[in-house]
Length: 230
Length: 230
Image (cartoon, rainbow over all chains, first blue to last red; front, top):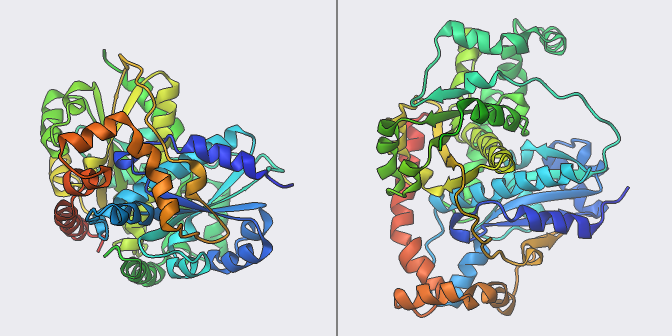
């Protein structure tokens, strides 16, 4: 079932109330609804089925271009082609994005956050025709949900909170923090299927490997250069 | 008036329902309540008065250390000392942070987002004793509000949304996007006080200058190296 454009835009409008660096609103959103548009994005997100399956795909783009162009037109020397400016724009964009997700779920929509957006930024930059001083940082697929899945596990919040300074947990505490996650049947199954000794090895050897991370870090850095942020 | 620790932790617990890369929850929060702790942070945030004035200061920290230590204890080769991993952790942290802000305001609290956190990361790293594979990305001051300020202006949402691909606005459209902001009395006053030709120059010459941005970009990159993410 379609999701009306006016609803998406109304939610984005409210989401734009999120905190933003100096009220510069350093973000844009590319709204993909056509089959051709989704087909161009899908392989860049490793063909995760929600890209083709959802009525709306939103790519949240860190954007210092619009502001810089205004400065250029105003005889003002815009010095935003650097890493700090990218970080500011990425921050603005993610706060706006999370606000949108909260509002969308409150409106009864379902959302899926695609973490793959920064895995192959050059591909997405090409597919969406993103110019200098813009950079894709998050992708959200949006639709009316047809299921109500159980909430996944989370770590005990107390293990993530540090009083006054960072409390570097001892080995026993680290083991305790992840013990519940290791005990879950679904995770035991992943260990078995992948023939690993334990759950941590499923992460390091199968899901998020050093080799992939290092290759994608290289691509990320190249894309930051390409877009004028380094 | 104090904000109870149990309330803050309960809000953080709910906030941790935000999307997270592979359910790794790549973040920590340092909760500063002592005068000494706030006094150490205040100059790093340019002595903005809310640091000393708010009962609670929360520093949201991108954290791949806890997960990496679990991997190390599990005989798993954790390859998370790179830029992609930092970006994943920064993303997780900001989604969690924005969720916290929404929940805090819903509970009647007031929050202020300090964008200065990444301006001097090395100082904050030292003040909070942040170890390798952690990095401060956002700071939120929290308290019971004693005023109800008017909402600041925002750009027309339609000017931030692009259909299918990035629509690089023409010069006239760029001028139109920022015209309302330029027309505001408070902004006209900034132009006058700073003896500038227009509002864009207030941003580029006074608030966010090329010189500062480039110096802080250098510091940011050094801090990423220092913390093991480059």
